[in-house]
Image (cartoon, rainbow, N blue to C red; front, side, top):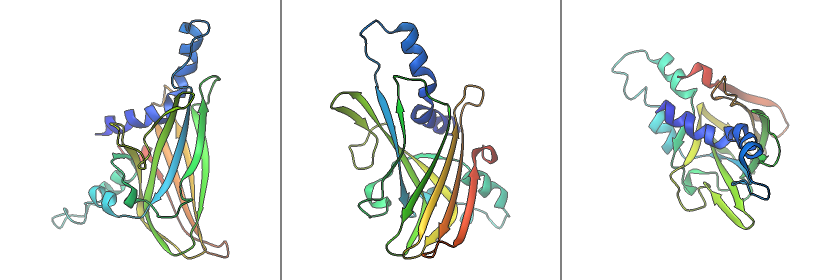
Length: 212
C-alpha cells in the first residue's frame, strides 16, 4: 500500500529527523543511541521481474487508454523483495550514496548523485535501495539483498521505461529526498544515460508528487 511504502522509506531516510532530538532529551549520560549510524546503498536492477509486477497497464487495459494511470503508478517507490539475480552482476555495482551519524543533527532534505559505468551494454529496469544500520561496534543490521531477508525488504524505484546503457557508457542517478514532518516523505529521482563519449542519449525524471 502507499502507506506501507511511505512508512518504510521514512524508516530508511527520515529517522535522522527524530533520533538526535530524542537522544538529547532522554538519553542518560553515558548512554548509547541505537542505531549509531545508517548507510544507504543503491544498485541498478536488470531483471524485469519487479517492473512487470508494477507496470501491468498494457496487460490489463481491456482496450482502454490508461497512460495517465501508468504514469501515476510509475512515479512511486515500492517495497519489494529484491534478490541478487535482479541486480546488475558487476562486482562494484553497489554504491553507498548517503551516511547518517546519529551523534549529530542531520538534514531532512538530502541529495545524492550516483554514477555507474557499464563495461558492456546493459538494459536497466530500475534502482534498488537499502540500508545498513550500525547497532553497536561490530554489530550491523542490513537489508541488503546479499544478506538474510528481513521484514523491511528493499525499496524499488521503477523507471518510466527501460534504459539501455551502451558499452562504455554511464548511468547517472540524481536523488532528492524530503522527509520533513510537514512533507511526510517525497522522493524525486532523475536518471540519465551517457554514451562512451559522454554524450547524453536518454533521460527521465520521476516525482512522487505525481504519484499517489
